[in-house]
Image (cartoon, rainbow over all chains, first blue to last red; front, side, top):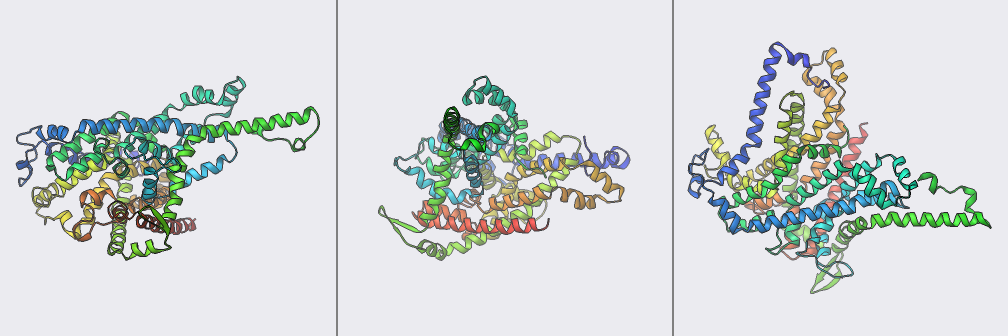
Length: 290
Length: 316
């Protein structure tokens, strides 16, 4: 491990060592409190009865834990359906992003057709446009597609297709493909492999890590997204978890809303804990070096 | 690839016989290669065109139009005038600016400090990273309901008020007091979002060569001096980039006011520009006005980015 701000020697002995361990313990305690504390409060709060939650001072442990809020949330808000919807949109988003974005990045990186750089530039330029600025014209487009005049409202394509227009994915994938040696592609072409075959048999197997990153980001993005699904999925049958909970929050006891929020958060937290290494690697691989 | 596509100068002229034929087939091949390339690109181009490029132009066009009973006409700057005269317009900009500045003061410095701290620890690194990133992974709606109902409960049963009371500090009405609305929203937003900045900074910190610290220490530089003269200059680019990204993101703050403050908040204390776009577009049936507000927001952010880039690159 390379040296950082404070040298190993300073931490290794004498007073420095005590100070270091004191800081480690303090950081562990404080960070656990700040980042897990609210989650604990959320999970246990939803186990409390309506009276207990309104009690002062609040109880640290639920006196009489009951799962009623959770079961109420599950049945009254139809969470199973909402969760299925969200999952369905997430899987579709992964599929469409993987197919169209990898194909595009492959073309831009290896096939390099005429004006490819112009296309890439136009794609990357969309990174500069704030999402909020596009929301109205995107919505107007989605409810009445140009030329064909079809509405995408309540159709999963309203979520899938805009997500393909993700310049960050194209950038990540293209940069990864750029690092694959040209000789490999040339060898495959000499052997008579078509571009599609080259992509499928040579590029994709080598790109598993980056494809994993793109997929995980697509899933978490769909799970977290709020405004766009709220606009294009107006009917109760097609809502996502976040939108559905928000729609019900007005007329539902707050403990039930929080219980539903806990249930909605579980899948993303599980996905994160399983893939945390890939997620963290992906996060920093996209960033610039300082 | 490169050798295949560059045709020698002499062969550009059409020649008779076998040589000319070769040129023609080579040209045909190049054409076919281009077509293949675009066949791979077509799906992405279609989606970008439909949901990014076209809406960008359409937003600008819409902002100069008015649609009434299916009839669209050009109205010049009418939408802009109407939007600016909306009493909430200036309040929304004021609130958005306030949120952005507060988020910059807390949400920008804090992740850097946390990253420096975590980078110095030799133990429990993985655990602490997961902790910091955990809120980022939560659906914002879930996290915000937690804050709204449990943390910002204005009675003494709320989590924050209970803590304040325990410490014998004055309690707060949180979202129900206009003065606390923005700080409370910034607090929730920082908790939810700081994890990704921390991880980006951590990666940048690990790229600083250890010799620099070594040399600084030999020169007698203390801890703060080393941070000021080594850590910050070495991470300057990423610091500048994230400042910009954060400001652009916080200027678009939307879900925090929507969920925590039911949109406008007490005495309009939570109305943001993004929320106003949503209001006009989807509640007041004024899509053209919302488009105009979107264009204003785009111009403000673009102007800000231009000034920012100018300032940060001038120093080099």
